[in-house]
Image (cartoon, rainbow, N blue to C red; front, side):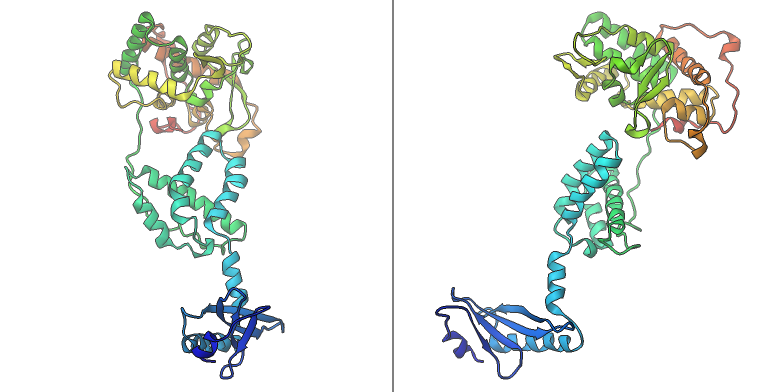
Length: 413
Protein backbone atom coordinates (compact mmCIF):
# COMPACT_ATOMS: atom_id res chain seq x y z
CA UNK A 1 0.00 0.00 0.00
CA UNK A 2 1.75 3.12 -1.28
CA UNK A 3 1.04 6.82 -1.39
CA UNK A 4 0.32 6.59 -5.13
CA UNK A 5 -2.21 3.78 -4.59
CA UNK A 6 -4.00 5.67 -1.85
CA UNK A 7 -4.02 8.97 -3.77
CA UNK A 8 -5.55 7.30 -6.82
CA UNK A 9 -8.32 5.52 -4.88
CA UNK A 10 -11.78 7.08 -4.45
CA UNK A 11 -15.15 5.84 -3.21
CA UNK A 12 -18.02 5.97 -5.67
CA UNK A 13 -21.12 4.47 -3.98
CA UNK A 14 -19.93 3.62 -0.47
CA UNK A 15 -16.82 3.84 1.65
CA UNK A 16 -14.11 1.28 0.82
CA UNK A 17 -11.10 -0.19 2.60
CA UNK A 18 -7.60 -0.76 1.24
CA UNK A 19 -5.64 -3.41 3.15
CA UNK A 20 -1.88 -3.55 3.35
CA UNK A 21 -0.14 -6.71 2.16
CA UNK A 22 2.89 -6.14 4.37
CA UNK A 23 1.22 -5.68 7.79
CA UNK A 24 -1.91 -7.74 8.23
CA UNK A 25 -4.75 -5.73 9.80
CA UNK A 26 -3.39 -2.38 8.63
CA UNK A 27 -5.39 -0.42 6.06
CA UNK A 28 -7.01 2.80 4.88
CA UNK A 29 -10.69 3.76 5.01
CA UNK A 30 -11.77 5.86 2.02
CA UNK A 31 -15.04 7.75 2.63
CA UNK A 32 -17.44 9.17 0.04
CA UNK A 33 -16.33 12.63 1.17
CA UNK A 34 -12.80 11.80 0.03
CA UNK A 35 -11.36 11.60 3.56
CA UNK A 36 -8.80 8.80 3.85
CA UNK A 37 -7.93 7.49 7.31
CA UNK A 38 -5.30 4.94 8.35
CA UNK A 39 -6.57 2.29 10.76
CA UNK A 40 -6.00 -1.14 12.21
CA UNK A 41 -8.50 -3.97 12.49
CA UNK A 42 -8.09 -6.77 15.02
CA UNK A 43 -9.91 -9.16 17.34
CA UNK A 44 -9.70 -8.53 21.07
CA UNK A 45 -9.50 -11.14 23.83
CA UNK A 46 -13.27 -11.67 23.60
CA UNK A 47 -12.87 -12.41 19.85
CA UNK A 48 -14.76 -9.25 18.92
CA UNK A 49 -13.65 -7.33 15.84
CA UNK A 50 -12.46 -3.82 16.56
CA UNK A 51 -11.23 -0.97 14.36
CA UNK A 52 -9.01 1.87 15.57
CA UNK A 53 -8.16 5.01 13.58
CA UNK A 54 -4.48 5.97 13.49
CA UNK A 55 -4.50 9.23 11.51
CA UNK A 56 -5.42 10.85 8.24
CA UNK A 57 -3.63 10.28 4.96
CA UNK A 58 -1.70 13.43 4.13
CA UNK A 59 -0.91 14.11 7.77
CA UNK A 60 0.83 10.73 7.97
CA UNK A 61 2.79 9.01 5.24
CA UNK A 62 2.07 5.30 4.62
CA UNK A 63 5.39 4.22 6.16
CA UNK A 64 4.75 6.31 9.31
CA UNK A 65 1.25 4.90 9.71
CA UNK A 66 2.52 1.37 9.07
CA UNK A 67 5.09 1.74 11.86
CA UNK A 68 2.38 2.86 14.34
CA UNK A 69 0.14 -0.02 13.21
CA UNK A 70 2.89 -2.56 13.89
CA UNK A 71 3.29 -1.26 17.45
CA UNK A 72 -0.45 -1.31 18.16
CA UNK A 73 -0.96 -4.77 16.68
CA UNK A 74 1.98 -6.05 18.72
CA UNK A 75 0.21 -4.74 21.82
CA UNK A 76 -2.92 -6.66 20.76
CA UNK A 77 -0.91 -9.87 20.60
CA UNK A 78 0.18 -9.20 24.19
CA UNK A 79 -3.48 -8.90 25.27
CA UNK A 80 -4.14 -5.16 24.92
CA UNK A 81 -7.32 -3.68 23.46
CA UNK A 82 -6.29 -0.22 22.17
CA UNK A 83 -9.79 0.62 20.88
CA UNK A 84 -11.35 -0.03 24.31
CA UNK A 85 -8.55 1.91 26.02
CA UNK A 86 -9.12 4.92 23.81
CA UNK A 87 -12.87 4.77 24.45
CA UNK A 88 -12.25 4.58 28.20
CA UNK A 89 -10.15 7.72 28.03
CA UNK A 90 -12.79 9.48 25.89
CA UNK A 91 -15.60 8.49 28.24
CA UNK A 92 -13.65 9.05 31.47
CA UNK A 93 -15.11 11.57 33.90
CA UNK A 94 -13.68 15.05 33.69
CA UNK A 95 -13.23 17.38 36.63
CA UNK A 96 -15.99 19.56 35.14
CA UNK A 97 -18.47 16.66 35.30
CA UNK A 98 -17.29 15.78 38.80
CA UNK A 99 -17.87 19.39 39.90
CA UNK A 100 -21.41 19.29 38.50
CA UNK A 101 -22.20 16.27 40.66
CA UNK A 102 -20.33 17.73 43.64
CA UNK A 103 -22.45 20.88 43.58
CA UNK A 104 -25.68 18.88 43.30
CA UNK A 105 -25.01 15.91 45.58
CA UNK A 106 -22.70 17.44 48.20
CA UNK A 107 -22.86 21.22 48.39
CA UNK A 108 -26.64 21.52 48.03
CA UNK A 109 -27.32 18.76 50.56
CA UNK A 110 -24.65 19.21 53.21
CA UNK A 111 -23.55 22.85 53.43
CA UNK A 112 -25.15 25.92 54.92
CA UNK A 113 -26.35 28.45 52.36
CA UNK A 114 -23.59 30.96 53.16
CA UNK A 115 -20.84 28.33 52.89
CA UNK A 116 -22.38 26.89 49.72
CA UNK A 117 -22.32 30.34 48.12
CA UNK A 118 -18.60 30.74 48.86
CA UNK A 119 -17.72 27.26 47.61
CA UNK A 120 -19.64 27.73 44.37
CA UNK A 121 -17.84 31.04 43.84
CA UNK A 122 -14.43 29.41 44.32
CA UNK A 123 -15.37 26.58 41.96
CA UNK A 124 -16.60 28.95 39.24
CA UNK A 125 -13.75 31.43 39.61
CA UNK A 126 -10.71 29.22 40.13
CA UNK A 127 -11.32 25.47 39.91
CA UNK A 128 -13.41 25.03 36.74
CA UNK A 129 -11.28 27.29 34.54
CA UNK A 130 -8.04 25.58 35.62
CA UNK A 131 -8.95 21.92 36.11
CA UNK A 132 -12.33 21.47 34.40
CA UNK A 133 -11.03 19.79 31.20
CA UNK A 134 -8.72 17.39 33.12
CA UNK A 135 -9.67 13.76 33.64
CA UNK A 136 -10.42 13.15 37.31
CA UNK A 137 -7.87 10.37 37.72
CA UNK A 138 -5.22 12.34 35.82
CA UNK A 139 -5.03 15.34 38.18
CA UNK A 140 -1.74 15.34 40.06
CA UNK A 141 -0.40 17.10 43.12
CA UNK A 142 1.66 19.32 40.83
CA UNK A 143 -1.55 20.47 39.10
CA UNK A 144 -2.99 21.42 42.50
CA UNK A 145 0.20 23.23 43.55
CA UNK A 146 0.23 25.19 40.28
CA UNK A 147 -3.38 26.28 40.81
CA UNK A 148 -2.76 27.13 44.48
CA UNK A 149 0.21 29.33 43.65
CA UNK A 150 -1.61 31.10 40.82
CA UNK A 151 -4.30 32.60 43.06
CA UNK A 152 -3.38 36.17 44.09
CA UNK A 153 -4.01 37.81 47.42
CA UNK A 154 -3.11 37.21 51.04
CA UNK A 155 -3.34 33.43 50.75
CA UNK A 156 -6.63 32.87 52.53
CA UNK A 157 -8.63 32.42 49.32
CA UNK A 158 -6.00 30.10 47.85
CA UNK A 159 -6.16 27.99 51.02
CA UNK A 160 -9.95 27.95 50.81
CA UNK A 161 -9.64 26.60 47.26
CA UNK A 162 -7.52 23.75 48.65
CA UNK A 163 -10.24 23.01 51.18
CA UNK A 164 -12.84 22.76 48.44
CA UNK A 165 -10.58 20.66 46.21
CA UNK A 166 -9.79 18.26 49.03
CA UNK A 167 -13.51 17.67 49.51
CA UNK A 168 -14.08 17.34 45.75
CA UNK A 169 -11.47 14.59 45.35
CA UNK A 170 -12.57 12.87 48.55
CA UNK A 171 -16.03 12.58 46.99
CA UNK A 172 -14.40 11.37 43.75
CA UNK A 173 -12.87 8.47 45.66
CA UNK A 174 -16.16 7.82 47.44
CA UNK A 175 -18.05 7.75 44.10
CA UNK A 176 -15.50 5.51 42.39
CA UNK A 177 -14.17 8.16 39.99
CA UNK A 178 -10.68 7.98 41.48
CA UNK A 179 -8.67 5.32 43.28
CA UNK A 180 -8.87 5.50 47.07
CA UNK A 181 -5.98 7.14 48.87
CA UNK A 182 -4.93 9.25 45.87
CA UNK A 183 -6.35 12.66 46.82
CA UNK A 184 -3.94 15.05 45.01
CA UNK A 185 -4.48 17.78 47.61
CA UNK A 186 -2.83 15.66 50.30
CA UNK A 187 0.60 17.05 51.12
CA UNK A 188 0.11 20.42 49.41
CA UNK A 189 1.51 23.10 51.71
CA UNK A 190 -0.92 25.89 52.52
CA UNK A 191 -0.01 29.56 52.64
CA UNK A 192 0.62 31.01 56.07
CA UNK A 193 -2.33 33.08 57.26
CA UNK A 194 -2.55 35.68 59.98
CA UNK A 195 -5.27 34.39 62.28
CA UNK A 196 -7.91 36.95 63.29
CA UNK A 197 -8.74 37.00 66.98
CA UNK A 198 -10.23 40.49 66.97
CA UNK A 199 -12.81 41.41 69.57
CA UNK A 200 -13.92 44.68 71.08
CA UNK A 201 -12.64 45.87 74.44
CA UNK A 202 -14.93 47.68 76.87
CA UNK A 203 -13.52 51.04 75.74
CA UNK A 204 -14.12 50.16 72.09
CA UNK A 205 -17.68 49.12 72.86
CA UNK A 206 -18.13 52.48 74.56
CA UNK A 207 -16.93 54.28 71.42
CA UNK A 208 -19.31 52.19 69.34
CA UNK A 209 -22.16 53.08 71.71
CA UNK A 210 -21.45 56.79 71.27
CA UNK A 211 -21.36 56.40 67.48
CA UNK A 212 -24.68 54.54 67.56
CA UNK A 213 -26.25 57.28 69.69
CA UNK A 214 -24.99 60.06 67.41
CA UNK A 215 -26.25 58.54 64.16
CA UNK A 216 -29.52 57.53 65.78
CA UNK A 217 -30.12 61.08 66.98
CA UNK A 218 -29.21 62.55 63.60
CA UNK A 219 -31.34 60.07 61.66
CA UNK A 220 -28.47 59.50 59.22
CA UNK A 221 -28.87 55.70 59.38
CA UNK A 222 -32.02 53.67 59.02
CA UNK A 223 -33.27 52.43 62.44
CA UNK A 224 -33.43 48.82 61.19
CA UNK A 225 -29.73 48.91 60.31
CA UNK A 226 -28.85 50.12 63.79
CA UNK A 227 -31.11 47.51 65.35
CA UNK A 228 -29.32 44.82 63.35
CA UNK A 229 -25.92 45.98 64.65
CA UNK A 230 -27.21 45.97 68.24
CA UNK A 231 -28.69 42.48 67.81
CA UNK A 232 -25.38 41.17 66.50
CA UNK A 233 -23.53 42.71 69.44
CA UNK A 234 -25.90 41.49 72.14
CA UNK A 235 -26.73 38.05 70.75
CA UNK A 236 -23.48 36.89 69.16
CA UNK A 237 -25.53 35.64 66.21
CA UNK A 238 -24.24 35.47 62.66
CA UNK A 239 -25.27 38.30 60.35
CA UNK A 240 -27.41 36.16 58.04
CA UNK A 241 -29.20 34.68 61.09
CA UNK A 242 -30.27 38.13 62.24
CA UNK A 243 -31.18 39.37 58.78
CA UNK A 244 -33.41 36.35 58.05
CA UNK A 245 -35.18 36.46 61.41
CA UNK A 246 -38.97 36.27 61.19
CA UNK A 247 -41.56 37.21 63.83
CA UNK A 248 -42.61 33.57 64.13
CA UNK A 249 -39.10 32.74 65.33
CA UNK A 250 -39.46 34.87 68.46
CA UNK A 251 -41.03 33.68 71.71
CA UNK A 252 -41.09 36.69 74.04
CA UNK A 253 -42.89 34.76 76.79
CA UNK A 254 -40.26 32.02 76.97
CA UNK A 255 -37.40 34.36 76.12
CA UNK A 256 -36.36 32.29 73.11
CA UNK A 257 -35.30 33.08 69.57
CA UNK A 258 -35.30 30.27 66.98
CA UNK A 259 -31.93 30.76 65.34
CA UNK A 260 -30.74 28.23 62.77
CA UNK A 261 -28.99 25.18 64.20
CA UNK A 262 -25.31 24.45 63.67
CA UNK A 263 -24.15 25.81 60.31
CA UNK A 264 -27.59 26.33 58.84
CA UNK A 265 -29.43 23.41 60.42
CA UNK A 266 -33.06 23.39 61.57
CA UNK A 267 -34.09 26.36 63.70
CA UNK A 268 -34.44 25.67 67.40
CA UNK A 269 -35.39 27.90 70.34
CA UNK A 270 -32.34 29.56 71.85
CA UNK A 271 -32.36 31.53 75.13
CA UNK A 272 -31.35 35.15 74.72
CA UNK A 273 -30.80 38.07 77.05
CA UNK A 274 -33.37 40.63 78.11
CA UNK A 275 -31.55 43.22 75.99
CA UNK A 276 -32.05 41.13 72.85
CA UNK A 277 -35.72 40.68 73.62
CA UNK A 278 -36.14 44.43 74.17
CA UNK A 279 -34.47 45.25 70.84
CA UNK A 280 -36.77 42.79 69.08
CA UNK A 281 -39.85 44.09 70.91
CA UNK A 282 -39.04 47.63 69.81
CA UNK A 283 -39.05 46.78 66.11
CA UNK A 284 -42.17 47.92 64.24
CA UNK A 285 -44.24 45.19 62.60
CA UNK A 286 -44.87 45.69 58.91
CA UNK A 287 -48.22 44.42 57.68
CA UNK A 288 -47.96 41.28 55.54
CA UNK A 289 -44.17 41.14 56.03
CA UNK A 290 -42.75 38.23 58.04
CA UNK A 291 -39.37 39.88 58.55
CA UNK A 292 -38.22 41.44 61.80
CA UNK A 293 -35.71 43.54 59.86
CA UNK A 294 -37.17 44.06 56.38
CA UNK A 295 -35.43 45.85 53.55
CA UNK A 296 -36.24 49.57 53.98
CA UNK A 297 -37.12 50.00 50.29
CA UNK A 298 -39.03 46.72 49.87
CA UNK A 299 -40.44 45.47 53.15
CA UNK A 300 -41.58 42.15 51.69
CA UNK A 301 -37.90 41.16 51.49
CA UNK A 302 -35.34 40.71 54.27
CA UNK A 303 -32.64 43.31 54.73
CA UNK A 304 -29.73 42.47 52.37
CA UNK A 305 -26.31 41.99 53.87
CA UNK A 306 -24.65 44.64 51.72
CA UNK A 307 -26.89 47.37 53.21
CA UNK A 308 -25.97 46.33 56.74
CA UNK A 309 -22.28 46.16 55.83
CA UNK A 310 -22.32 49.69 54.41
CA UNK A 311 -23.97 50.99 57.56
CA UNK A 312 -21.36 49.16 59.63
CA UNK A 313 -18.52 50.64 57.57
CA UNK A 314 -19.75 54.12 58.41
CA UNK A 315 -20.29 53.24 62.08
CA UNK A 316 -16.87 51.69 62.60
CA UNK A 317 -15.23 54.69 60.95
CA UNK A 318 -17.11 57.04 63.29
CA UNK A 319 -16.12 54.89 66.29
CA UNK A 320 -12.48 54.57 65.14
CA UNK A 321 -12.84 50.80 64.73
CA UNK A 322 -11.67 50.56 61.14
CA UNK A 323 -10.18 47.06 61.52
CA UNK A 324 -13.31 45.58 63.12
CA UNK A 325 -15.57 43.44 60.93
CA UNK A 326 -19.22 42.65 61.57
CA UNK A 327 -18.34 39.07 62.46
CA UNK A 328 -15.99 40.37 65.17
CA UNK A 329 -19.10 41.32 67.16
CA UNK A 330 -19.72 37.58 67.47
CA UNK A 331 -16.10 37.09 68.53
CA UNK A 332 -16.70 39.74 71.18
CA UNK A 333 -19.67 37.89 72.69
CA UNK A 334 -17.72 34.63 72.81
CA UNK A 335 -14.70 36.32 74.39
CA UNK A 336 -16.77 38.09 77.04
CA UNK A 337 -18.50 34.80 77.78
CA UNK A 338 -15.14 33.15 78.37
CA UNK A 339 -13.94 36.06 80.49
CA UNK A 340 -17.11 35.77 82.58
CA UNK A 341 -15.90 32.37 83.76
CA UNK A 342 -18.25 30.21 81.69
CA UNK A 343 -16.89 26.84 80.66
CA UNK A 344 -16.35 25.80 77.06
CA UNK A 345 -19.62 23.92 76.85
CA UNK A 346 -21.70 26.92 77.89
CA UNK A 347 -19.96 29.26 75.46
CA UNK A 348 -20.37 26.62 72.76
CA UNK A 349 -24.11 26.70 73.38
CA UNK A 350 -24.17 30.47 73.68
CA UNK A 351 -22.78 30.78 70.15
CA UNK A 352 -24.39 27.56 68.88
CA UNK A 353 -21.18 25.97 67.76
CA UNK A 354 -20.82 22.26 66.95
CA UNK A 355 -21.14 19.85 69.87
CA UNK A 356 -17.95 18.71 71.60
CA UNK A 357 -19.36 15.32 72.60
CA UNK A 358 -22.00 13.01 71.18
CA UNK A 359 -23.67 12.81 74.59
CA UNK A 360 -24.60 16.49 74.34
CA UNK A 361 -27.65 15.65 72.23
CA UNK A 362 -29.09 13.48 74.98
CA UNK A 363 -28.52 15.86 77.85
CA UNK A 364 -31.55 17.64 79.32
CA UNK A 365 -30.06 21.10 79.14
CA UNK A 366 -31.45 23.77 81.41
CA UNK A 367 -31.93 27.15 79.75
CA UNK A 368 -31.44 29.08 82.97
CA UNK A 369 -27.61 28.93 83.16
CA UNK A 370 -27.38 29.85 79.49
CA UNK A 371 -29.77 32.76 79.93
CA UNK A 372 -27.78 33.84 82.99
CA UNK A 373 -24.63 33.86 80.91
CA UNK A 374 -26.36 35.69 78.04
CA UNK A 375 -27.71 38.32 80.44
CA UNK A 376 -24.31 38.72 82.06
CA UNK A 377 -22.56 39.29 78.73
CA UNK A 378 -25.33 41.61 77.53
CA UNK A 379 -25.21 43.69 80.68
CA UNK A 380 -21.47 44.19 80.32
CA UNK A 381 -22.01 45.35 76.74
CA UNK A 382 -24.90 47.59 77.83
CA UNK A 383 -22.73 49.20 80.52
CA UNK A 384 -19.97 49.84 78.00
CA UNK A 385 -22.52 51.32 75.60
CA UNK A 386 -23.69 53.58 78.40
CA UNK A 387 -27.19 52.18 78.66
CA UNK A 388 -26.85 49.58 81.44
CA UNK A 389 -26.09 49.50 85.14
CA UNK A 390 -22.97 48.37 86.93
CA UNK A 391 -23.29 44.95 88.53
CA UNK A 392 -23.23 44.55 92.26
CA UNK A 393 -20.02 43.09 93.63
CA UNK A 394 -21.47 39.61 94.12
CA UNK A 395 -23.06 39.66 90.66
CA UNK A 396 -19.79 40.66 89.04
CA UNK A 397 -17.96 37.60 90.35
CA UNK A 398 -17.08 35.03 87.68
CA UNK A 399 -19.53 32.16 87.30
CA UNK A 400 -18.44 28.84 88.72
CA UNK A 401 -16.41 26.94 86.13
CA UNK A 402 -17.53 23.34 85.74
CA UNK A 403 -14.99 22.04 83.25
CA UNK A 404 -12.49 23.49 80.88
CA UNK A 405 -12.46 27.26 80.64
CA UNK A 406 -12.60 28.87 77.28
CA UNK A 407 -9.80 30.91 75.77
CA UNK A 408 -10.67 34.11 73.99
CA UNK A 409 -10.35 32.52 70.59
CA UNK A 410 -13.22 30.14 71.35
CA UNK A 411 -15.50 33.01 70.43
CA UNK A 412 -14.62 32.56 66.74
CA UNK A 413 -17.02 30.72 64.51
